[in-house]
Image (cartoon, rainbow, N blue to C red; front, side, top):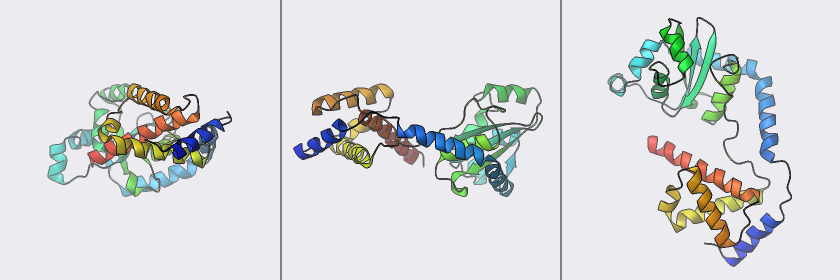
Length: 245
């Protein structure tokens, strides 16, 4: 899979690693601080987006959650976030989906957040806003969702139980680790694309990486294994999104 020169380079990078606090820790803390600090501005921005787009009732979401109805009306089932507001108690829930109508639909058909559904059938009044990722200034669904959760205080005051995902990709200790991970993924795909596509869960990815590292004489206890695991996971996410388009 690798030339001797490549293996020597990989081993030298791995061997020179000095244990330290993960850079992802500092990245997360910095992002959390800035997003919390700017959440008022974020809410103003998101409110402006919402005003430009339709606001739905649960009954309309239940209707448009059906593909046949959307097809008849020419409604696009886009990638974005949905903001559910309980107008009775001024509580929010924010979620993300590659197909927002399908996902928002579930919360009012007893397949999503159980507390939203209980309040809905109890007679609480709800509205739902859908924001396409492409209509926003944000680059990923994770970023848009997390910022919206903080802006509307959907956690801890609303229905969300946690904040959104902050880290979308591995945060590397240095450029060499990133280059190595990209090289490995490229070689795995070249060697056996079907085998790469089969790495669909945690167990399979761990077993594959463990066997690969043993075969190449690489240590398991370096950040490289974690970076590679996360990178393979992200590659599979990208492939799934492409299949859904």
